[in-house]
Image (cartoon, rainbow, N blue to C red; front, side, top):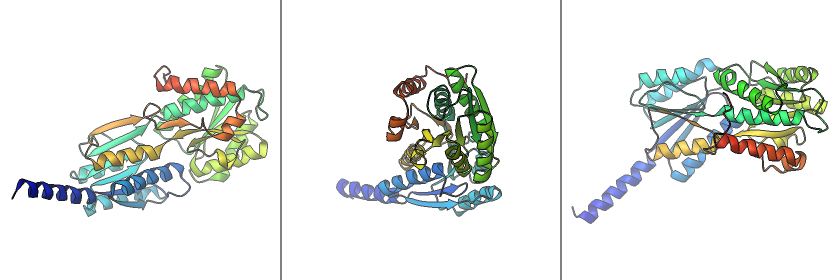
Length: 328
């Protein structure tokens, strides 16, 4: 075989191998109505469309007892070069599946699994996101905006208790608020569900009754109830993950963003090009372009006074450059 023919054969093999790459996404829940899952799936789909690899998405539903068996069933098929799943509820299941199928590659996004040679983990710096939200809440409660009151009280409503919430999110939110004023009181409530807007509404009502004028909701669909209560009482909400300001302009004042779509797209690209570091853990935040804030939203620009917007940009840059540690 001539060198020219050999080069052509090698090129053809490379093209075929590229298009035979396949990925399965095992979603721990349902995609619709969950901004993080919607962004992650969008990021994976855009990478698949651009690079031409096969992508299968499986929704695990809300019965968490089935998530592990769904993950193992996907691995047992042997059809996928990479199986991806999400959240801090899945590390043990990923570790178990990785031990059962040592030749199968796994990626856990928005969660951290134990180091294993066939597992890659990507966590997000939720503490940066929540510090931003806390600092903004502190500025708003001290402001003269119509919905602010004289009380130095802000709130946080979580969908559930889990390590990221108790160890990073709540402490960073509290630290951010108290960086504005050390006497700010931070109320904390847990819904116990990501899909109970009625209880989310009740908890928001209770926090507003205790003097909060602005609440950060990290509660999935349960947060819809908190938004409804804020609208009823002319109080404020801080959104999270995606920009939800258009849902209730003037009530949702700002959103701390988690660009899970960009993170997922990057993971897909690196996996496709054999550059994903299996056996390693990474955490991405502001410096990596994953954590952000709704600085450019037109309603934010119209509603929030310039001095507050300026202070938020300064804090954002300080977090990005490591000047502020959101936890210590």
